[in-house]
Length: 173
Image 1 (cartoon, helix red, strand yellow):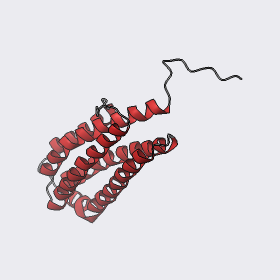
Image 2 (image 1 turned 180 degrees about the vertical axis):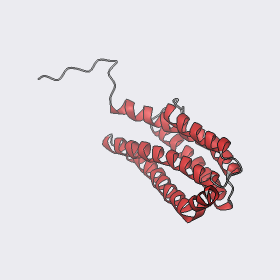
Image 3 (image 1 turned 90 degrees about the horizontal axis):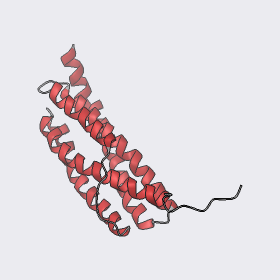
């Protein structure tokens, strides 16, 4: 079967990559607003400190994404991401429904891990696409962020297993 010539409206991997960068840029900006609220809502210093640490990392991740936009010669603009909006809304519900309860930290950790897993999936895809497109500089920036997201996920698991889940169990007993 003969390959059909591309029409002007047909989109390819470059377009998907740019859309993905816009999506994760929007997500990171939303996460920047949510993290201080999560830190404040937590009941333990360890959990609050983890959110504060991730806030600083997220600021750097936004800067990296802005570098990727520069490499693409495109303005740094987000694209509404209903997925992250929904995940963050669940986190807001946890903050409201479990305020002042021992289970709040376990709930906040779970909400934060949902965010991390979304980010890991998105960054993993973007790294792969950047490599496929020969965008080595962009791939390197995205890999750096991907490694941070994976480390944050591990740290959150440690916080849950290191006491937050147990505190939530004890209150329920």
